[in-house]
Amino acid sequence: MKLRHIAVLVGLFTGGIIGFPAAHAANPAKPAISAEASTALQRMGQTLRAEQFSFQAHTIRVYSEANGEPLHIFHTMRVTVHRPNRLLAEMTGDDGSNKLVFDGKTLTLFSAQEKKYVSIPVPEGTVDGMLKEAVGHIGIDFPLADFLSEAPDKAFLTGVTAGRVVNAVTIDGVPCDHLFFSQPPGIELELWLEKNDRSVPRRLIVTYRSLPGQPNFIAEFADWNFTIHPSDADFVFQPPADAVQAQLKPVAPPAKRKGGTK
Image (cartoon, rainbow, N blue to C red; front, side, top):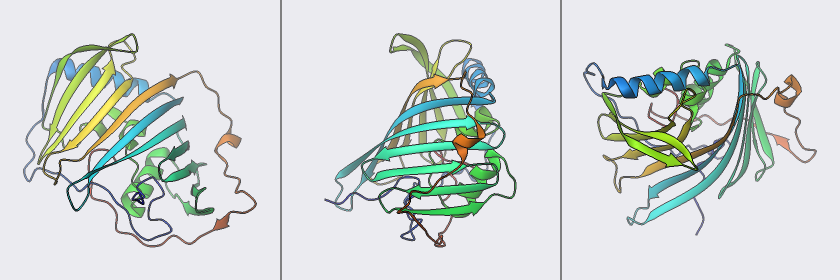
């Protein structure tokens, strides 16, 4: 059975993007976030505002087929950030290998499977500007964008109406807080943050209760490194000799949702 392509480059060469729809309250109320949850998120936000860092994420997307059967698609993502204007994301998974490269002026998206790449100018010239261009204007499905924004804690809480700490757990020997958030209508978020001064994410689960089959997105984070020193050359895309530059086909931007930039 052929898997549906849903990686970062999905649809750039085929004309379609698969993603989860929006969930917004008609009249959003003031968020009811517990003090403990708010403090943990603020620590996370402060940590992820670092000038340079990298991490790895293993992700699983669960979809419900037309006949109701679930479909699981796995990816491994390696992300390197150099603020304010450099980002590299390398992905491998069930639908091939893809790369996203931003050098401060141009966003390049490369599909190793298709042997094609597209380059898009980013007028704003920052990581936040690139994310807005990629997710908001082009329609790229980049599920971890909130954690790469200039204010990760605020981006994560966009649309959230309630949040609390569920309990404390241990992940790979590290104490973590398990947090739960609600985003009407029908999105639930679980976030595990290290229970220390860094509060880096270790797990994320987004569940879409209002969709058929209640699909979800799962990410496990590892190898956080805040001592890296990447050079500008690391964020320059060099196309393989057999790669072809393609034209970006117009797509409708995905609706604002958790697991992407708002």
